Image (cartoon, rainbow, N blue to C red; front, side, top):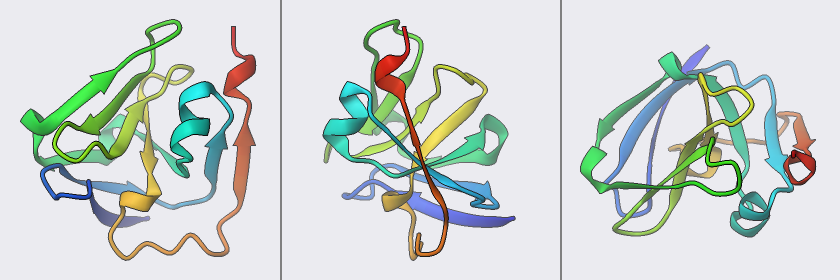
Length: 115
């Protein structure tokens, strides 16, 4: 397990996660396709918001279960509370400082087919 810091583009939102990075995921739902995020799933206890709670905005769609967070200053998607596993977050690994996704398996999830 490793702890990695992350932030949005402007730095208003800062967070840290703990993960073993066993796999990364993509998703084909309408929002994930558009933002092209590469995510790692972590339990809610493994994500710690360090700064910028007031700079976070959220968005819900479809069943209004998943909660997608983004910086309202720069607009970058940082993480989301997952619909299927609401006690976990999907974290945008492109927001992680110095993170190299090379060599980590990527699993494509089929969010578009979820009813």
